[in-house]
Image (cartoon, rainbow, N blue to C red):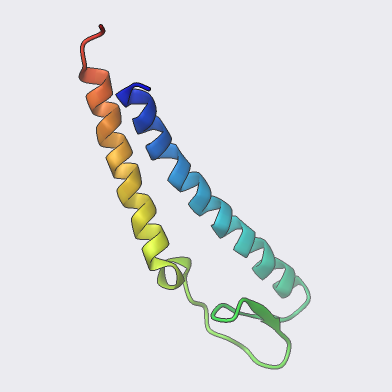
Length: 88
């Protein structure tokens, strides 16, 4: 497999997984708000008895977000190397 293809996989795949997790959670939050509840981000449940503060996705999944960004930067570097390599 070429450096360019590996770079593209490393560039796109981590962000796709991260966005999948984000939008999955977002649908849970929207469903809870439609039912007039308050979403408890720390327990990932809809609560109808009390309000809960908003906690950003980055604050709750810091290692996932940072890891995905680092892998994507590595993918970008490999893409650049793959584009500048001479054809064999």
